[in-house]
Amino acid sequence: METAVLSLDQAVRDLSRVALDELDPSELGSLAVKVGRHIDKIKMLHSRIVVEADRAQSWRESGARDMADWLSGKTGTSRGEAQSRQRLGEALDKSQELADAVENDELSAAAAEQLHDAIMNPPAGTDAEDLADLIDAAKGGGPRDVKAAADRWRETHSSETPEQRTARRYAKRSVSSRPPSDGTVETTVVLPELEHRQFMNAISHVAGDWDTNDTRTPAQRLADGLIQLCKAYAAGTVTGGREKPTILIGCSAETMAGLSDEPGWTSHGDRIPADVVRHLAEDAILRRVVMAGDAVISLGLKVRFATDDQYLALMMRDGGCRWPGCHIPPAWCQVDHLIPVPAGGPSDLDNEVLWCSHHHHVKHRAGVTVLGDAHHLHLLMPDGTLVACPPKGHMNKGTSTGRDDGRTAQAAA
Image (cartoon, rainbow, N blue to C red):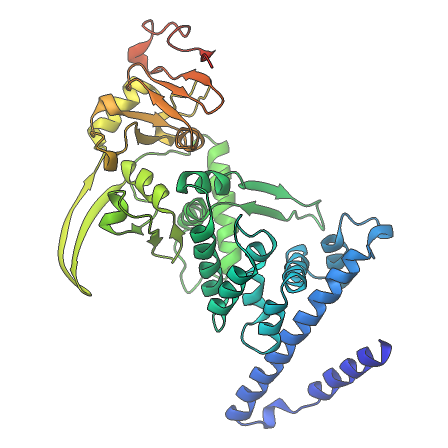
């Protein structure tokens, strides 16, 4: 082992002695590619060593929480980078086909890591041949393309409904922090793609437009936007509403009509599940684009399913999120069609209510049944619980008892 490591050290020293300023552009480019390929091979080797060290619990006596914590501390890298190496190693250890693809330069280490979840937790009913097909389809792709291929493969082989898939992904949301170090705290935010794009758009907008006199890095600029947003909330100056679109999403007419589950896409390339696109459309500004081949032949007017006048009426009637005990105000709520528009639901006040983002997701969970209309609304949950969701607006004060019209009861089994 020591001989091999010493040989690697010598190779690095030899490369460091190369006079880069004496190389012509072609030689520099060739060197960059060749060294990059060797680094990729070393990443592959390192990831396998990391997995074996984790299996042997080399970190156990150090007081570290886990292998990633120990490795990041020992090498001075981030925990995220250590976890990335561990994920790659786990995937290579599980799939010889994947290891061969990286060894043969058919996939980079970074691209191979994107197959980790599919290889370690494949959908029920898939077999080794299905995984081999996925790896074969991924060959030659970059990390982003491989991730998209893995997502499509999972959806194709999954027994989940689109609504169940969306609920599972939403359940992964989290904000966590590491212990302070040098007066700073590393915070990790995990969000579904859509909420992540909304988050990034919001803090980027708050940070202000970049100009040539701005000395901040892009990461510092986004951090400033988040800090400003939190300070504005603490000062009571954060407002919400329907004045500005926060995200641009394209989709096919078939997706909007519920005839296809082809995902939508954002201007940043995020893939948005079809069921999420449809329920976002309930509170969005819509514009029809008619195409013939690759030519746009018509742009329709911008319209809303729920108009601004309807939103004002809902603000007065619902007073905020309709879920009992939730105090999110109307400005922070979304308009929901109890019967979706693609299913024939009308865009009128009898079919529209306000939910906060969380309870909007709850209402759309698989197995939740809507009972009644917007005036006498109950949700029957999958476990049989009947949740009454009466209007809370000022115009309803004194007319809702909060008991029979606003209580949570058990439905008969």
